[in-house]
Image 1: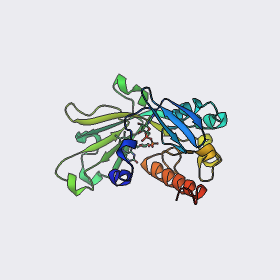
Image 2: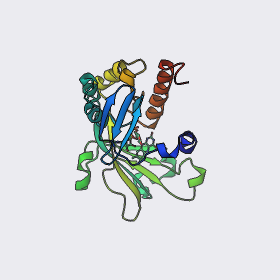
Image 3: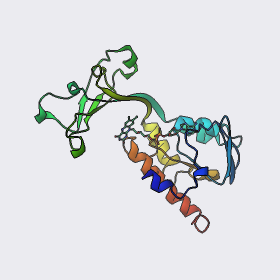
Image 4: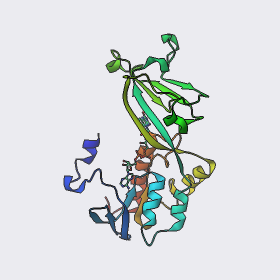
Length: 226
Ligand SMILES: Cc1cc2nc3c(=O)[nH]c(=O)nc-3n(C[C@H](O)[C@H](O)[C@H](O)COP(=O)(O)OP(=O)(O)OC[C@H]3O[C@@H](n4cnc5c(N)ncnc54)[C@H](O)[C@@H]3O)c2cc1C
């Protein structure tokens, strides 16, 4: 999927693992700066970074609108941990009680390194539950665990920052960054990510907001971008 989408973009214009630290220029001639390189000039910028990162990057542009950076700061993120493992003790022993997802709370984290997950709901997904490809193995994905899976059973673990919706941020999303939100497209800058999608902030929100922005951009640029 990624290869198909990227195939029409010249490889020399794709830069991965490149942290952008600042932006200079003005609408229709933006330059992006990393610690070692500059990229541009670009007519449009589509920010696909988490809201707090987008706010910091935008603030480096001398002509930025402080109302947009303040709006981005209403989206609050919290640390989340996802562990993929093969420890069956995270789901009921009886297969008749197995579901796709198993929620457990309240739980007090046992390890010091899990303390910032206090009061979170532990959620375990049985990855092999419906997958014919995984029938022969037992693989679980636990989000926000209160304890670590047993030794030797951990396949991978990732900490990441997850956006937690609030009434204030939902209002901001609708009025500022949603479909026809006043900040979308202003000075040829666009905003996408899970924090802009409807519903629970997950992968679907990234795709939904990206599709929305592409449609708005093409509408706005009709006759030029098409
Ligand atoms: C192990 C794991 C499993 C998951 N499983 C699921 C699942 O099954 N289903 C689901 O819906 N969700 C899942 N999630 C959650 C999902 O990945 C996130 O909700 C989603 O990726 C958030 O998307 P985003 O576009 O808002 O942010 P991100 O995916 O975090 O994208 C932001 C991007 O910005 C880049 N970036 C940050 N700073 C800079 C900078 N200064 N310059 C340039 N680039 C920068 C980052 O490298 C990153 O690529 C999972 C997460 C993890 C960690």
